[in-house]
Image 1: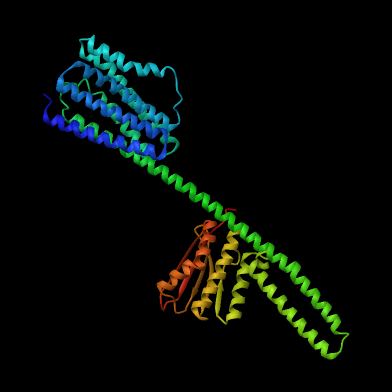
Image 2 (image 1 turned 180 degrees about the vertical axis):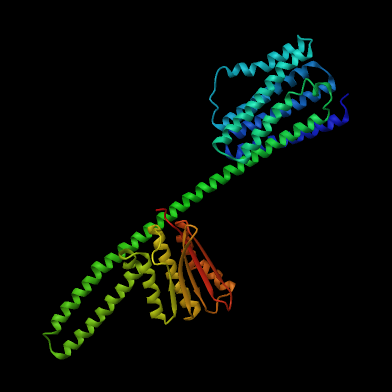
Length: 426
């Protein structure tokens, strides 16, 4: 009769194997990836193997031992095929049928024809160990191409399992490992399950990284198209609409010189309205795409923006920057300019003309813009609303060029905006 301790160990091993099989089957249903289906098949065979050996130990009938030996060999082949499918090396070869035929043929010879235990067990053990080691090597090769913790765990587990198979004719067949051999097989089963889960996590991470890169590329493209459209509109307003209004003003001035005083006053008033329109268009074009950014570069544009804001709002602003800035991408220049625009706008809204410091520095391969004001600061609710408003667009624009935005503020201690843009490698 099967000892109770060994029966308990076999039931525990069967339960864990069943859970791993259900896990792999569920993953196959969810993803329809072939290797999850083959994992489920392999663990189903392993579960049948446990049932066959328990039946043999209870009944001591040789057909159960024969079935156990056959399923054991097929389980090793199923695990090897699963690793090949996973690694993309699952091209079918006709001689694979020879490998599949070996377990039943040799099991029949070993159980029903041979009387020498070592002679009967050695080829089967060697077959099982080589197939398991080959599975480990398959995952090791995959790990060398695509390093991951899951592949490392699977390669290590199968290689150790292959070594463990070699003790069968020496220890396990003589009952020395009972019931600890079951527990060791459980450890290997759990190791494989952990490797599978780690591989899933690695794939999800790779997928998320790829999607993040795609979104970043799309965001960068949208920013580039947005700026191109702003530039087109700026040029159209400057070169067409403003020029037309200037021509209208000249014509009105010419007419005003030839008419009586009352009509001349009305024409002069009309010309002042045209001047107002021209000024508005120039301000609009400057906001859409500052000419200094295209004509003179980033540093003069930032200086000009700061000076204009200080004059317009009566805000004392100190500007500190190196004489020469490192090269950043065109999108990076636009992102910094827009960030300073938004930062100064927030100073106007929340700092109430308080003293402000605008500075640029280079460190760690990044050009960083700092906007510090000595205003009353803002509480968490206002800061959160700001982050969802103008700062959200700033963050998207800066993130699109690989940069980062941080803002810190406390009531009574002012606000500090920091924008970092990566420097282009010369």
